[in-house]
Image 1 (cartoon, rainbow, N blue to C red):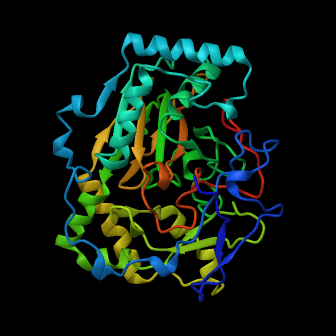
Image 2 (spheres, rainbow, N blue to C red; image 1 turned 180 degrees about the horizontal axis):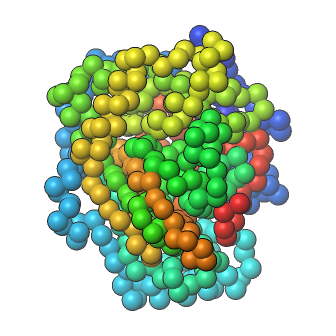
Length: 409
């Protein structure tokens, strides 16, 4: 594995050439001090793309084929193609390994394949990893005993599964490598500071800041909170047929994404990038990075003239992209004990708004993982400076250590 590179930031909105940004106590992300990062690897964090290797629209495919292109009709009446109920044998192996890990006293942030062996289930997960990266890009596991095991064992077993798919990433400025998707009372209208997953509001189609996202349902909502996923490559083909001008606009590095204050010393408050890229080498596949909440929330900077305001063409493109995703999406409901793993490279996902049960019933609660799959280990060849970092992507603020809280903070 090549050593990690340093984080890079664009010098200004007008200058596309990157300059090296260094943390206060700079070191390579894969040579981080173990007194802060138990495995010696720091989450790389958010970066502008390598602007000089971005491809022009003329080099993008007009039609994508292959296993990453799928339609709702392929799966809606064929659950055997995308649902895997854990067998009794798999649950027992997972349970025994989780109990042994807990008894060892190892901190949850130090979990790995080496201290969480799954001889049989691990083979299932290895095959799944290839399908997540290079195939349809999603799976729904069932029969995880979330309503039987306590919070600690749920977290240990779930993160143990994750070690077979990728490297854990920090998901926010507090260093959480185990996220809690739960309403904590934040105001969803304050999109410049609030992360929508901490509210009951609808989440529009988006991709997270990691190669793979996992969601384990611990408690359901009374109403709503349902999941939709869509093949980005099917969406791209549809846009090429119906709105090629929108497809072209999405390839241009004119889109500003908010960091919502989760920035390290010396970083800008935003990242300028396209919505869709082509791989920088590799298989040359189309990759998508999108979240409308992070694009709409930047008026505090555009009002001051620091970045351009969204154009009418961009607003139209955003609407068409969302409507196209809604029209083509596969809908699913996560029950207690379901685990959904998704690719963030070639899928977008959404969540309907929801209403919780009245107290004292528990609120809707999902455990979330962001997982990195570096280029040298089969991940996509992204036009990013950290493409071969083990923990590429994610959100890292200075040297905030990783945490795995057992409930929302």
